[in-house]
Image (cartoon, rainbow, N blue to C red; front, side, top):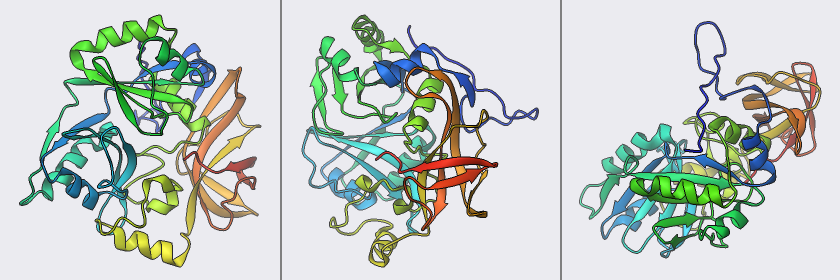
Length: 343
């Protein structure tokens, strides 16, 4: 098995787990592969929910922020599940098949999404099945990911989030780290076959920590730290998760009110610090012109990367109007350059 497992470090003597897997780390072979070639990450802990029944598209359309009813087999979208107050309960990729949808969501929101949908199935012809334990999911990511995938017969579709069949597997154009990437799904019994095939084509094992560092370096938000149940959709700047002409859905009134007013009070931004050797923990204040203007949601330190050098990377919510790419802020006395998050 090529996947490595590294236990997260602890943030203090009381054993509280840090928000990031590893906040002060030298670049590894897996990390460099995600940035410069092709790294293979085990994403099987993510939740996978199969949705069937004649009313499946109608239900998902009414429960998510994106347009489900216009999807055709092979299409995929990214969307949010909201509560009635317009706050984000979960995010997910929705993949459309001939006779079902597959929902790919974070491990932390797997149960929540299932129960949230189940609660709203009343007279609908919809059935939910959690297939997480009987399937696998790998991420093959990096600038050469599609090349490596093609070598082993797992050619990715050209349209973002779309998916195609490749033998016993399904391949989707999805990346968790902000680089080029494909996501590979299959039955649990085919897991070892997939690993052997992808490894032989040149993929390099990347750990969860490697993937976490890479996604922060590319300013890709993640549910559970950068996006939470307190977050409004427009605050994330992930506008590809929203469709403003789709009609009614749970939480739409708040989303539409924000759109009509033209702004929110804060925006998620990426940042880079050249002069610091420790990653600021979540909640650390970000300052603009000597005043508190936001706070850190996730961060990581990378040492000795051939691609990104040595620096601190992170994401933070920044108050408008200071949330602008190229703006210079301050964290713990160190200058910080702000960047728009990856969409």
